Image 1 (tube, helix red, strand yellow):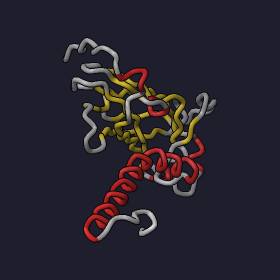
Image 2 (cartoon, helix red, strand yellow):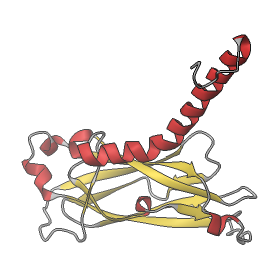
Image 3 (tube, helix red, strand yellow):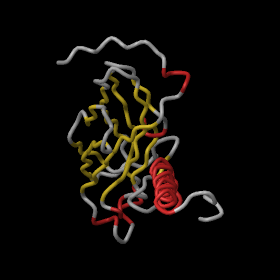
Image 4 (spheres, helix red, strand yellow):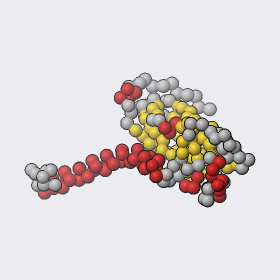
Length: 196
């Protein structure tokens, strides 16, 4: 560190070192969400889901229950919830679920959802056709949006050594705040949607 701070002595050098450590920690915090998503997609860790362009041709008579969970990282100012608690589908049948996000603040807020499926044994068989989590979401002040996710459970789950014992799957989303794109930062506030 003497080469980095050659003119600093004693307490000033210590303060400079702490500032560098704090800066590195902040940078790692911003990098953690995309890095974790990439890691899970590559390794399948943590029940990461599969994706597909369309549903399978085969639909089994066997059913499976899917529960929906919504959460936010600390400091994310949105309100975020699943609009249904659970649904029961035949394995291979296409499901459509909805989540809702609302920005109650007086500023534009951007976010992106990371997702997880539990138990881990179901992750590779829970397949998304379309999902709001694939894209960054930007909500203006007072804006409320309904976001769909289209999915199915791959019939191959009933042949899997662990997957065949899965009767309930939990799909969880966590929204993380992101820096607002410059092109959208100055947009006028939206008209707030009526609350039912």
